[in-house]
Amino acid sequence: MKKVFRLEDLDCANCAAKMEAAILKIDGVSAASVSFLTQKMTIDADEARFDAIMKEVVRICKKVEPDCIIHLK
Image 1: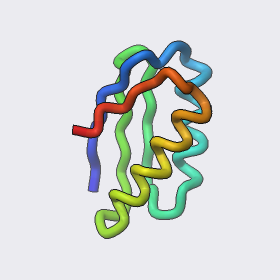
Image 2: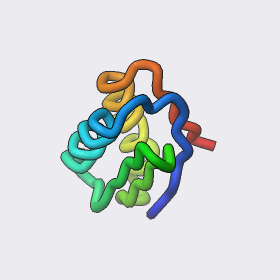
Image 3: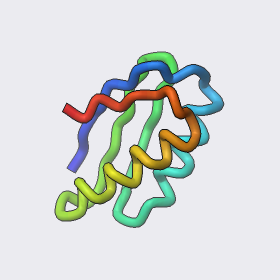
Image 4: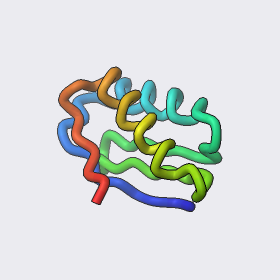
């Protein structure tokens, strides 16, 4: 399952790269892209575990960039 999420207050390209690298290490994620320029995140992950994977993605993103908001809806 592939979904695109809008980001808010992602402050730098380095933070986006750190988020992307960490998300790619999550079990069940087949592809991930975090773009500082477009403020978007694309996740391609196992559909059966997608909600659990997204909870882990949010946790990782808050650790890297505490002010960043992921619009999950």
